[in-house]
Length: 449
Image 1 (cartoon, rainbow, N blue to C red):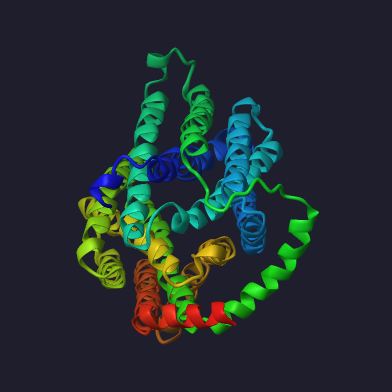
Image 2 (tube, helix red, strand yellow):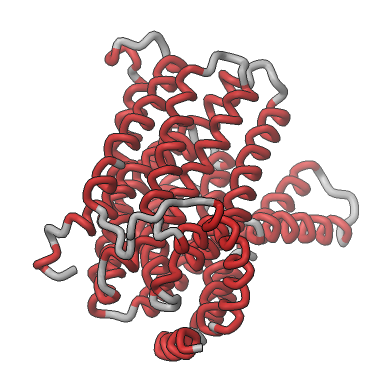
């Protein structure tokens, strides 16, 4: 970012929203909702039943956003209302999160409903938040500004999560009855945090080309047509299409690694406090790491940095396959923190160079749709490879002892995790064919037609 733009309120208003909404991602999605759902709202239910209920809620919210994402982005473009749509979904998420405070023990259905609506608010706002990036800074500044947003997200989400962890571990300090009472107040603090810091984007972001038009059915109906047109546009923009395919593969690998690292921690006998500490480590290391990637993008090509992150994730995958001890898990968390924010931030900013700026809403709708469908191929691959390897080894052996079968299962699970590396290989190879200059030429020809 240029020094004369350091105090640019338009840029800071945009970046601070990441600080605001990351509290939901850390304290609610990754932190306390899954635990509290099982032990409080779904109390008395079979553990597999509560897992299925929570999984269905996550899947349903992701599916809704994945389907509506491109449509919402198209409508936002047509109505010149990216900022207004972002704020609508953001405060929808704020209200739903705050509502979790009032849900009583055993009311799992109401809890999962508010959670789904909160996820839709969180994810829906991110579509328009990402789409605003090309409008609030120059193309040269986007890598750093995108990284600034992610870094503030790690820091803000980490700070509130740390406060929430202390609340849960030491509820008496805050005058709370017990841990359950503390977690209820954690949801309330997330809503307050998210709502208050979203005021800065409200005041500071000035959306270009906003002529005061209102969103009516005259904008929504053509939005459906524009959604179909977007698919046709992506087919014409070959470099954009190649990047989206590459992104789908390697970001699926990133998300799967994150999920598998938690599973590994549990299999190694980690306590919940160990997992929370690892999550806090990711947040606070991710803050400077994302900034460093943004700074490096000024000297190096963003595509090259994304490729470096992909190669690093290949190493992380192999580290996960061979690790056995607790300290190795913390090293894994550290490595993830070093590259997670960078690959996310630079992917977002690099994509902005491969699309028509005045149609960023609909194109980022597709981008976020792929993000929602991520972590589908990876987990399926892990499960399929693991079961196949185990079945094959057992079928090739005679009578096996219980200990031998257990060892085979352990080996098979590691083989399943190793298969994730092919997602990074595939994404890296396809990304190598993406040419930014050719993409700009394709966009220029497209806009002239």
